[in-house]
Length: 92
Image (cartoon, rainbow, N blue to C red):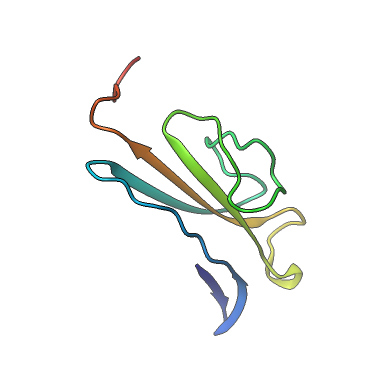
């Protein structure tokens, strides 16, 4: 991922994970102090960060240059979730 401002890279990072057959994957990108809804085990650990929310696979945190942040703790987040076809999708 690469975040640009006025043509200049102000945040970037690489996320790698193994795909699984017959799995629906969703990737969410956000700028925030923490990834809303992912319930990571911590907000500053090494990538990938384990998460505790339903179907969450992993979360990655990438720094944003201080002069490009909207507020002090803002970071660039990638949240990857997966749903296996045999897991409940609605209410469990």
